[in-house]
Image 1 (cartoon, one colour):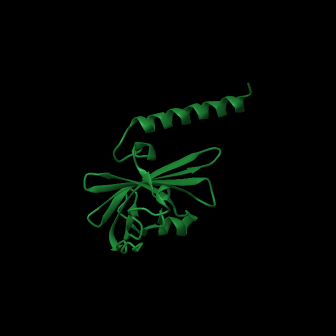
Image 2: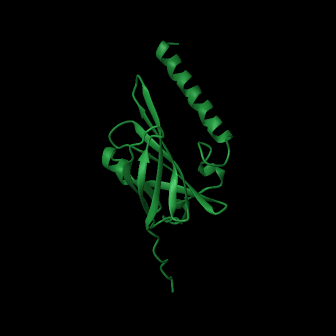
Image 3: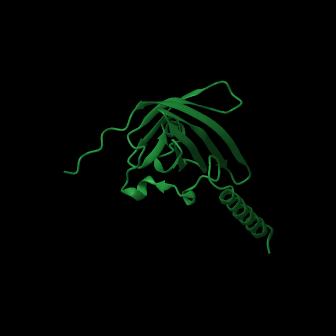
Length: 167
């Protein structure tokens, strides 16, 4: 077996082990929050979700930083996106998944950059007009990977509109 094939197989096994660990962590905020934990994809229920129409204005930052970056978090048509991440790298709106945990609504979404091998995985909660959570950003190159965790928080600036009547 060539060195490159051994490396590729080794990376595949590591990815498989990480995926198994992610699922094993179970429910709650963090890497274990996934559609497999009983969450419902907004796109699986007719392209709309319970958070659709909500817009939150807030900030995102590295936990060790004091410099906040202003951001807007938008739920629309069964998708979630960050206007700042879209502006910086073209992260498109992607489907979000939700579940109720007590009075909170947890959500999960993943978006990939349109211009490079980078992704953001969002884990957050919405409760009493506030959104907060973490976003894990990963940038992969063939010779290195950068991973950063950001915290975000915002307040509801545009509540979901009234549900249209079908009568």
